[in-house]
Length: 235
Image (tube, rainbow, N blue to C red; front, side, top):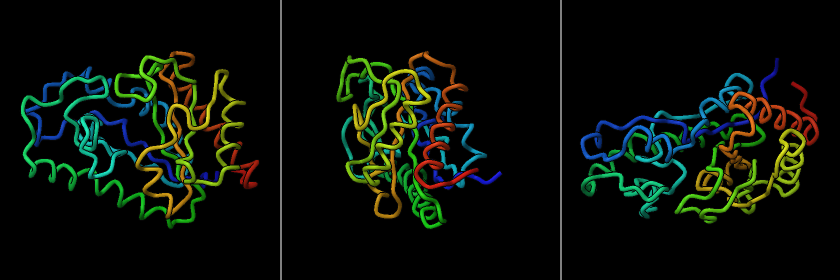
């Protein structure tokens, strides 16, 4: 079976606490998991052997957020001081040398890999996430219910008709609301790599409308259908 010509990125599925900050971390395993994309590893695993390239990481989002720019020093930035639930990450500020080590070890290699694979003949990069069913404190929609699926086109990271076609295909395979650029239009990964390859972001709600395995099957079906309709690709 031919692999789908997609570059899949799953940047927030990891749970690893880096050795460099383990002694300073205040977070419990449950808090680390909640700050990341719960369910993402299980949901998107179905894509691993069905697409051209599948890139993920072990590092937990609470410690290095691969979907932030290196210079993003906000509380919920690239190396965070607080989780998206406004919980402090460390008992003391990290030394600049430690921040640099984290960026060098985790952030830069991930983005280098995406750049490298962009020239491998794939049609589209897809940055894959899960989102809380209602907006967390640092979200653009704090406390508001979210759709089942949000497609983000990075405000120009892919052709508009591609993004609209993806919304249509996801709507056929998910029973709830599917939105474009609400509540998210796409993060740093989509925007930073759009000059190399068209990119979109997928955000799936963590609401229990289906099992993780079923959500994954629906994602695969929607992407396969989009490739067939938009590009005539039949796996």
